[in-house]
Length: 414
Ligand code: DSN
Image (cartoon, rainbow, N blue to C red; front, side, top):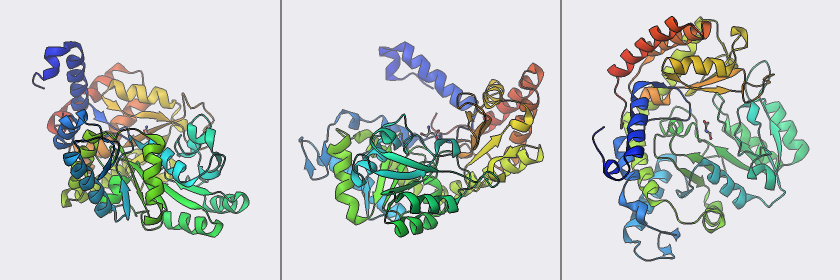
């Protein structure tokens, strides 16, 4: 990376940013929630819009000087509605966690009950887990996956819904490798008179690209981040039915947040323009093809995949049969330039800080142009590293292969 204005002011941070860019170029990033935002998205994020304050919404702001920002936010909202077929979009949530909290603020009263997926089964902290605001101000009953199938147990969801009559059903996950049947969730929600919130943070790009069913037609509210498979800036969005538009907008501002991050709004608009192109549909297809090729390769090496494979961008390996922990495996992979995260698997007997699994995602490596043949090599390398996590010769051989592959496929934006 060439010298930037940061070098003159703060060489220490400039050097660290350069170091991180080199890391992102030089390794295979398999953290399922990460991606490479385009140079255009990064430029919008780093634009002068960061200097503006705009509490309120287009046409209804508390400060002056909004002529440009109003247009930016209207464009972002319109693009979100068009891409996802939503009645209404709010593009101000700072990220996924505040987006979810705003949805609760709009739909629930403190103490109300939600039915959501449990964190150890693939759900998210902000879906009512005790240590978060969502579990402090609201009550949660949680469903999970079947022990044999690794898939959401809809009999359990329906039974819990009938028994507890929640005000809200939450679906969506951060470590679930299968298609989520939003229509089935909507049916259960309708039966018990609950609202339905679908959190598509992980799969928004797959939904936009047409390779995962959309929850928008059946959900009251859809929440998402904008930086995972959607490949935008760090941010969040809420999409909702017309009847919830006012409550959602009021919940985001003034309910939960202050001024929107206008530079992020601009970058979300850019990312949404990118996501509406045929090239992005091809990308979304390739993300899933790559995840499935990686799954096949790993199954061929005797790995135990939760649910037996994947329909989306991620896979969850249960390493119990390999005799290594998730942390040990993740460390061995990282030492060779393959970066992922240790992750609990459903019914995990180990503690969350050193769980039995690792989670792998293909969104970022697909953005740099890797294909299914590369995924087969990747599966071989992962197998070699997990079989001999402390073997320096194996580590060095895989690291050299990773360096060759990353050199052939430049990382976008960095
Ligand atoms: N941290 C994100 C993930 O990795 O899935 C979710 O918040």
